Image (cartoon, rainbow, N blue to C red):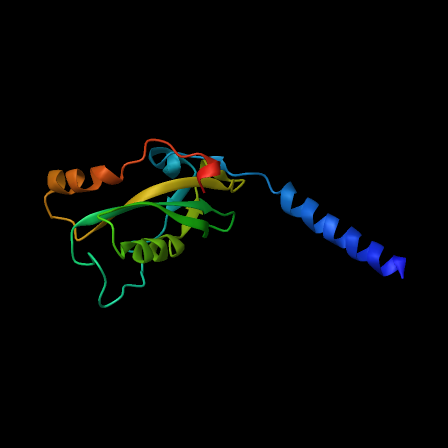
Length: 146
């Protein structure tokens, strides 16, 4: 009777140890992300509802994520949305659809934690678009912010 319990306990402890052995990814500011991973998407798919609060209003969302060794994203989290509304779901969906490939400098495919700002309904003028995205700017995030 004790042997099955010991086997289950040993299995649980080894699974916990394996989960903890995965190192936290390197935190990389958005301006340095291209030194590690090149974005493959020309455009990003998103799940956009037909009707939602502030869905047609100019705005932005800051989305954090981990780029995994295979170039997909995980641990996608919307850090900030301006204006408040249902763009959170859209931004999260966009973050989940990002795809990257490693740069030559990142041949070992290091996992990184970073963040990007996604514009919504942005004006065509570059300075107006930049001003619209400014409220979503986040200077620094830490791994604990995931």
